[in-house]
Every structure is written in C-alpha cells, then in structure tokens.
Length: 64
Image (tube, helix red, strand yellow):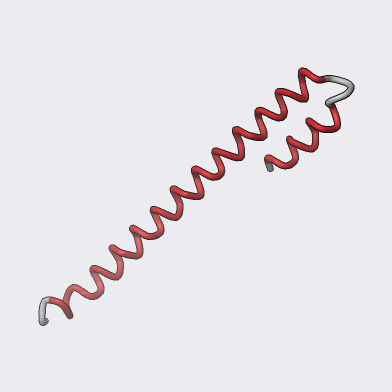
C-alpha cells in the first residue's frame, strides 16, 4: 500500500510537486502504521500462545 503512494508521488513529481510531496508523506505514514500494527500483532500472538500453553500445562505442573 505505501509503495502505491510512492509510485504516484514519483509520477507526479514533475507536474505537481506539492501533491507528490503529500503522497510521499502519506506513503511513509501508512508504512509506519503498518509496521506498528505488525509489531502489535506479533506481541498479541506471543502473549496469546503463552497464555494458552500456560493454561494447558498447568494441571501437569501442579501434579494433577
């Protein structure tokens, strides 16, 4: 998705530099938002797995 805005910015660079600059900024913002969401997803996934496996192995750890 950010790459699309980057390509649009490159195409518009000669004809409309102001819009190209805005598209470039939008592309970078989208890139960092997607990176942040990806990191958040990974953290939630790891926490979820730890909780699931922790609950599943609790009876074995408690000797029951």
